[in-house]
Length: 249
Length: 75
Image (cartoon, rainbow over the protein chains, first blue to last red):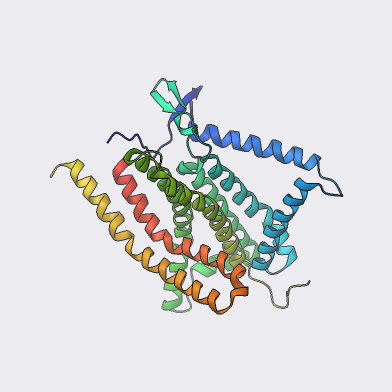
C-alpha cells in the first residue's frame, strides 16, 4: 500500500529560509477570504436588510443567543462572543474547504518532490496548537483578572490540609491537560477523517468513501462547535457569576 | 519480529483497545438522550447540542488512542 500520508504538512517553497507549507498557504488564503468577505459584508449592511443580510442576522443572532444562555448575562456574553464565534467560524470554514471536489488531486513540483498543493488546514497540528494556546491563555488571564494574582496561585497551592494540597495539584495538572485534550480532539478528528478518506478511496474508489465523506461533513460541523463551546465553558468557569448578578431580560 | 511489524501490531492494539471505552460511553449518551427526547419531545432543541458536545468530550480518549496509532504508523 503506497499511501503518502504524513503528520507534518508538506513544504511548498522557501521564503528566504522560512519554509511555507501547504497548510500554512491555505490558512492564509482562508484568512484573506474571510477578511475581505467581512469587509464587503460590513459595507453592504443596511438598516432594512436584504435576503443575504437577513440570513446572516438570523445565524449570528442564534449563535449569540446560545452564548448568552451559556454565559448568563448580556455583558459577559458580549465580551466573549467575538472570540468564540471567530474560532468557530474559522475552523468551520477551513473544514468546509476540504469538501471542494478534486482539490486533493492538484499537485505541484517542488524541490522535495511532487507534493499536494492542498492540505486540510486543521490537519496540521501547529495551527490547532496555536488556537488551543490562545484559548487556554485567555482562560488563565480571565481567571487572574477575576480572582487576583494571589487568589489565582492560592487555588493551586493550598496548604490548609493535605487533601486540599493534593486537590490543588490535581487542578494544576487539569489546566495543563486542557492544552492536550482540546488540541488533540480537533486535530485527531480532522486528520483521522482525511486518512480514513484516503484509505477508503484506496480500497474501493468512488463508492466506499461516500458514507465516510458524509461522516466527515458531520465532524466538520460538530468539532468547531465543540472547540468553541469548550472555550466558552472554560472562560465561564474561570469567571463564575457573582452573587446577585442575574439575567436581565 | 522486525520493527515494521511491531509498529503495525502496536497501532492496531492501541486503537482497538482505545475504541472500546468511547463506544460504550457514546452509546450510553445517545440512549439517554433518545430517552429524554422521547419523554419530552419539545426539549429536542436543547438536548441535541448538549448531546453532541458531551459525545465529543467522551470521544476524546478514543481520539487520543487514534492519534497515538497514527503517530506510530506515519511518523
